[in-house]
Length: 397
Image 1 (cartoon, one colour):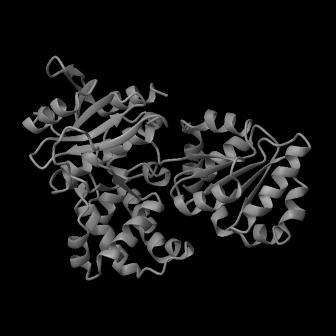
Image 2 (cartoon, rainbow, N blue to C red; image 1 turned 120 degrees about the vertical axis):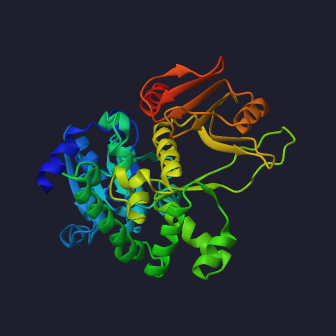
Image 3 (cartoon, rainbow, N blue to C red; image 1 turned 180 degrees about the horizontal axis):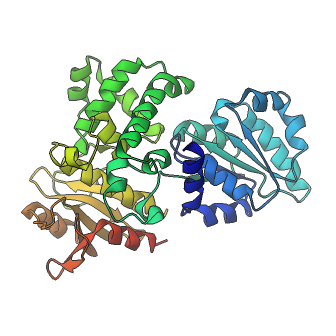
């Protein structure tokens, strides 16, 4: 089954494939960021099929041994694309790469030298940005998006987008994979990033975030519930954010003179992990669970944000008087799209949405709902399926 799943994963084309391949023709190194098991290695190997390459996995003792004298080894392969997987495990490699890249530049052979997949966002960004400044580009690989899988059912919502979870032979096998994934992060992976966080306490914290999916960050409440201080809560949430497991959606600040909510909304990024953390094993169980609405909201937001081009930024909007929009997309010239998210097949908008639109004057207004047909709600607002919304976003690139 493992081989079959891997084969199927390779058959699902990742949206960033061409852009990543093209970028390797333009710069010496590309850092490919993504949560563990999101498909980075599969994509890297797919890219390698089109050019001479070698693959090194720093979780392999044999491959680490090859790099015992890294400059000597890598200098012998400057005519190939060198893929170094989980490079955050060897930060001392970054200065070596810089030296080799600079020598290759002087010799006129500087592009497409290194593809560097890794699982820790800020840690890798800091290491590579300081050492490889001017020599590196960054790509983020998210779990499967519904545009990639062409999924118009609830499968991606229930199971999430991690390839092994999405492609499992049954919901129960998928849930078992996600449960093991969570355990692996808590017991092994987080320690590899140098964090001395008690795994059971972090598990309780992660479960609390799932219960409060999409809630405004309240550090005091979270701290009280797991018996720690606010500083520790900040450490935990930043850790999960850096590991690309949690998203902190920031509020949009406008000059409307209104009192704006200033704390971020917090989402567990993958809906399948939300359900695993809450022991929700299928659609039937989810439909009767209190997290239903916020699970759908988080799923839709992650689908949209994962497709956003670099020139657009996501926010939410909420005032103390009740004006609220679930998702605001802000474009370079300041124009905005307002997106409200409803699980209902017959969505009804609150006055707060219209008050917020009056405040912000968005260029377009959408309601993403659980149905499949698209239709106008009024002269300014379109009701649209999540798949159609994602098609619109993908078309912006």
